[in-house]
Amino acid sequence: MTTTTTPPTRQAEPIANSLTTGILPKYVPWLLLVTSWVIVGSVFVILMAAGVNENFNVVGAVFFGTVLWVIVNYVVSRVYEGPRPAMNRFVTSLVSLAFVIALLPLISLLYTVISNGIPRFDLPFFSESMRNVVGEGGGALHAIVGTLEITGMATLISVPVGLLTAIYLVEYGRGHLARAITFLVDVMTGIPSIVAGLFAFAFFALILNQPGIRFGFGGAVALSVLMIPVVVRSSEEMLKLVPNELREAAYALGVPKWLTIVKVVLPTSIAGITTGVMLAISRVIGETAPLLIIAGFTQSMNYNLFSERMMTLPVFVYTQYANQGTDAQAYLDRAWAGALTLVVIVMALNLVARIVAKVFSPKLGR
Image 1 (cartoon, rainbow, N blue to C red):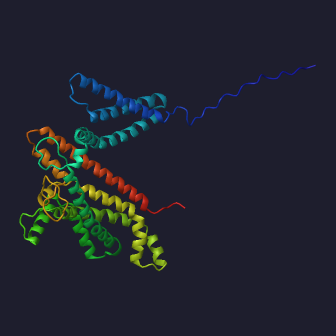
Image 2 (image 1 turned 90 degrees about the vertical axis):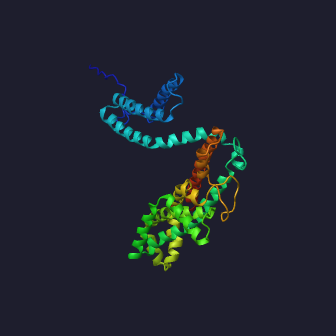
Image 3 (image 1 turned 90 degrees about the horizontal axis):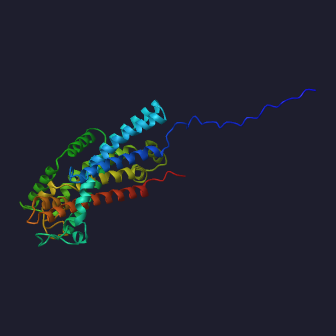
């Protein structure tokens, strides 16, 4: 009688997933980046405590921390993942380093403006003017009102002219006239800002027969000379991106060309056009030279664009920094607060532009 023996059963071994084995988790590079910034930042704090540096260098900490992250990220990836994935991460880290280097001027600007502008970023700064103020105190209400009025009027002048010019170049323009307009727009793009101010000053001095004329509307005209080519170029490129199939579909239904432009072309490109307008506003809202020439400067409130001198924030910052009185720190604080206010206004305008573009852009979902 023979007996059969059954072989012992073996437990199934877990199958390793070759697609995820030896791959760093997604949070590790970010953790290494933050750790690198903290380490380099701690070194800068120690140097500041030792008296080597007077202030904490944010730009240096971000830059050298990112460089340290590139090295550490490559070493950790090579040990854990192998040479080929490590080289891939190294090249990706270099691209990220180039992006950080491009952002360093913006980081430095924001840090400097915010740190120096906060001390006078208070209620009196936004509710008082500089009338009869020679030392501490005072504010930039007159400059804020002047900036908003002059820039708003320049926008009202530039946007219709620039948008209609772009529509003509894309939808109607052919031949020598269109090429001449394109050439002139390119020439206007390179006009120095002070030339625009001189043009507005000479124009109104001759038309109104007032050699020493200074008023806000002249500043708006000078800024519009700088805004129009930016609006034309940005709007032209956005209109060109509208597919011709949309136009042809409207024409096939018997829609006139002008109505096709109003109902199809412009709503399709409204997001890009709004962004271009905001870029044009950001381009001119910080101009100082043309406004010094034609709008002048004053220490008092002036709500009338068509009469007397009008203060603007760029000119306010320039005059506070260049013409310091006995209490120089008070003038410097007001100058930095004015610069911070200008940055906040530009950021608010860009936020409004994004909201407008999102609300009015065509809905592609079903």
